[in-house]
Length: 164
Image 1 (cartoon, rainbow, N blue to C red):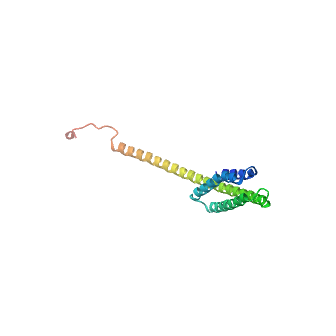
Image 2 (image 1 turned 180 degrees about the horizontal axis):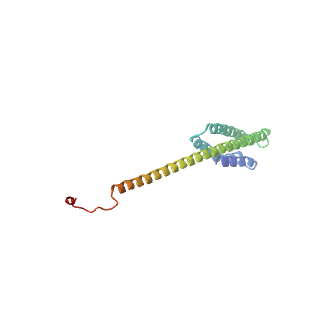
Image 3 (image 1 turned 30 degrees about the vertical axis):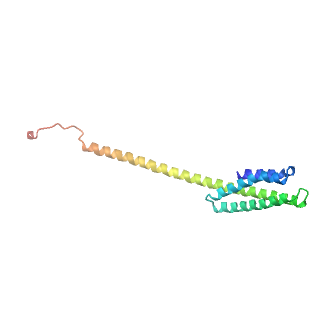
């Protein structure tokens, strides 16, 4: 989602020659707000050390981009500074996209590690369950042996004790 919002902002700035500053700002504001909201949500999750580093870099790039966007809106299309800010803004977009790729890569690695751990736990549970089943079967057989050993194999007839 972050990547999509960044891309939409980049597209708006590339097509900005066709529109005035107010219209450009109105087109980019929802994306800026969405990016900030997503970043707030992302920061609330448990982050690895690498993730935190790349997230901080990403946030710094976003802050610099917002500053450059204001500079861009304040300059006219004919101004030399306008094209310089456009180049700097494109560089920041590229850097932010690189940060997102790094964050995505870390999430994929962490997801794979969690998946591996889950599979290990499931295999351990299966082993324990199998051992429990074997133990229960052995106990059942043992109980059957005890019950059968307590009964005589041939039924005795009742004899009168005085006949012995």
